[in-house]
Amino acid sequence: MNENKIAILTDSCSDVPQNLLERYHIYQLALSINYLDRSYRDRIDITPEQVYENLEKEIPSTSLPTMGEIYEIIDTIIADGYNQIIIPVISSGLSGTYNAVQMVCDDFKDIRTAVIDTKNIAIGSGFFSVYAAQLAEQNVSFDEIVGKLKSKTNSSRIYYSLQTLRYLVKGGRIGRVEGLLGSILQIKPIISCDKDGIYYTVVKVRGRNQSINKLMEIIQAEIKDKTNYYLAICHGYAQEEADKVKVIMQPYIDNAALYIEGQISPALGVHTGPGLVGIGYFALDD
Image 1: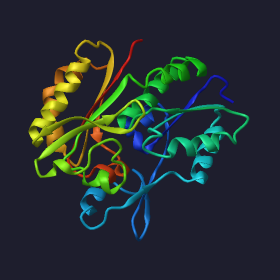
Image 2 (image 1 turned 120 degrees about the vertical axis):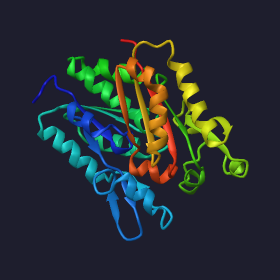
Image 3 (image 1 turned 60 degrees about the vertical axis):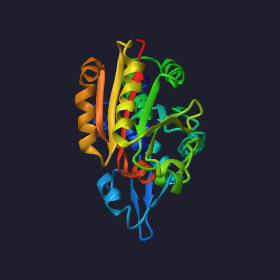
């Protein structure tokens, strides 16, 4: 057993990029994307592009990892020599992943587990796994890492500009975001997760460009006085716009302790549709 070694397990909707999964040996549970004819494992059997390209034909549903898959990955982690596992997962207000993982962990009596409800989504949740892995690498104790993660739910923020609310409505993930009222007026809401980890409207902006500009303004205002933070720019089938955001955000990227970019997971793309641009940060105080 790796007595002091701590394994970190995340879920595919936390959007930890492949290079960081490998760099920090973070294990990952895949959610499923379900079409009428078959199911795919998020980020394993299907790419974000494939989801977006097929949305006009069929909007799939998504589902949690099965209990069997959760047992299997924990067994693998134990077989790899770990007896302590920290599991930060996407908001329990948006997914049943937290409850499912907690239920399985309760069956493992001989190892220490801590399932962390990040109250966040996408890389806003993924930041917690990267942070936990960095702390584990510094030989910080299990209890201390868990305490730090639980105290950081207000330190992680991700904001999205959406092209349309159609997919959030269709997938029942609308949360506290007002529905389709604004579509005729070209209202492009910026959404985020509130303290309960549920989507809400931060601000309503008319027009796509104004919405993306407002998104950058919000983040710049929140991180301008911070000296130690992670930063991420993500998108859903909107590479060109994400690239423009990156150019403008470059000074903030240069100051970040860690910068992450990329496409959101296919399972998230099902619920947000094409045209999402997001910026997230995680404020560190140590």
